[in-house]
Length: 139
Image (cartoon, rainbow, N blue to C red; front, side, top):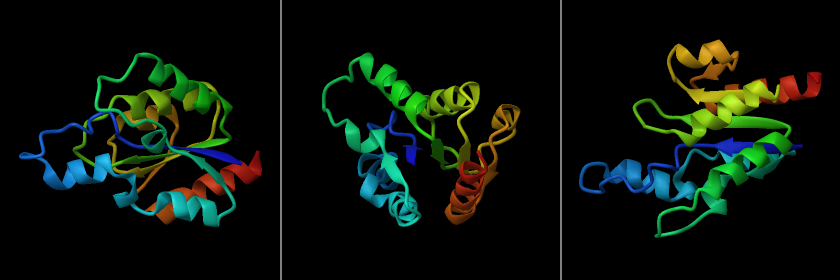
């Protein structure tokens, strides 16, 4: 099964003087929680836009369209939403998954707004991954 791994990469140029630890995490997906490894260990194939796109230039508009097409084709979506980190793309991807009836789980505490999409949020990665796998197996 193909899992789309969403995270706030759209703000990876945050001022390093203001946000050095956050910038390091967002720029280098290797420093994210070991989500990719956890999913692969569970037998999943993982697509991460954070690894798919690298540029120092302004990203082209087609990138989000391409990402949304991958969301449309995936079996499930796992989103990492650290509290207090701005993101646009991750929320768009979660909304698309909801509209297309693609099972999704969120790691973090995104607040009440995402609950309207029917996407559960969990404080721990293993809880979110187990929930997503359980729902994928129920489909």
